[in-house]
Length: 107
Image 1 (cartoon, rainbow, N blue to C red):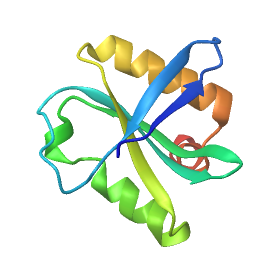
Image 2: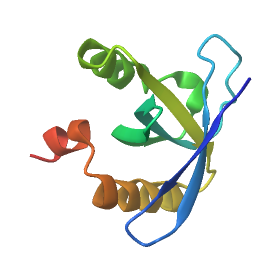
Image 3: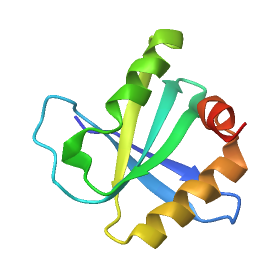
Image 4: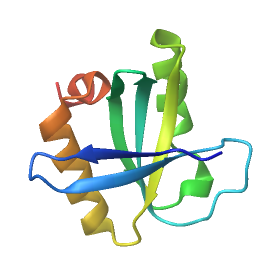
């Protein structure tokens, strides 16, 4: 069963993400994604990203890196067609949650 998790950005906007079943068909659509640890205490974002083609699986290298450090890391997605909307959402989440893997790439 697919889980939905809500994350709040720095702006106060709430974004609803859905867990991704990696072996299922993925639409060739633009999307935001987060790699997160989901525990009984809630979700913590490890990485926030965006892609113009979810089916291209450009997110898989970040997921592999996250799982190298956090074996329980999961990927969640949210479809967003417009690039400007995806970038703004990614920045909003990074500013609020300071994901460890985003901080490394910003340094």
